[in-house]
Length: 178
Image (tube, one colour):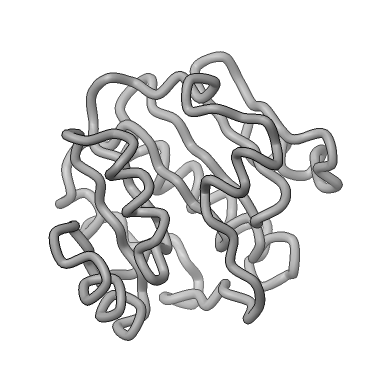
């Protein structure tokens, strides 16, 4: 199943890239707040140059952390910068390929999916299908989804949805996540 109407979606608006550390600090969120389950791999969905994959690996070692991106050049760069980490070039909407990665405890979509929704590169329909048709199907029962556009942050865990105070599209995203 591929949940994107167009197949591969280019959601990356050219601009500044924020690390997961910057985003968490700016929103006063800790990894403990996320209530990350103790099992399942961590997926950096749209890993770009692998920086966040590396940060997550350092934080959660020895857990399996996987970085994926649909752009070959991004994956080449990530593998060059972090040769010991696990990276794959694949369409993040291709359920069958993602399923081959195994059980996932957390999906981090930083600087991409939420940004694409906000800037209009991803339609509400596609966003819902990625969240409900791909992410939720791949996550273990108490899995966590973390979304950020670099500034705003939201996550969904077993207790519901949390969003940063400055989140302008809070009603839209809450509706699409529930």
